[in-house]
Length: 68
Image (cartoon, rainbow, N blue to C red; front, top):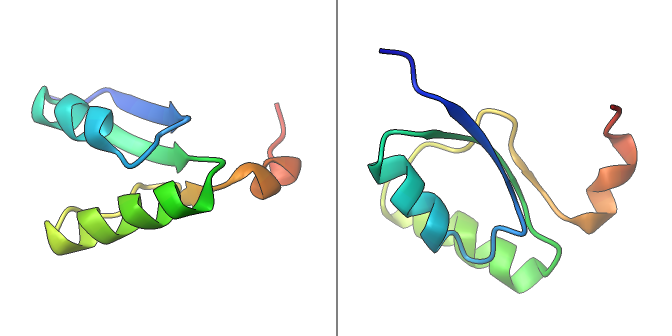
């Protein structure tokens, strides 16, 4: 069965996202404005050997390249 992709905004350090992944969702993109939280998110996923999001990590500075 194909997993539903989630785009995580205001991700914090990623605890809610971990729960969503445990429930069967796929985190496709992570966005967090506060850089220390984003770094903690990346660090914890690496230590737990969880794959990086398909579309990567972004902070508020990165929003300018997104098009709708």
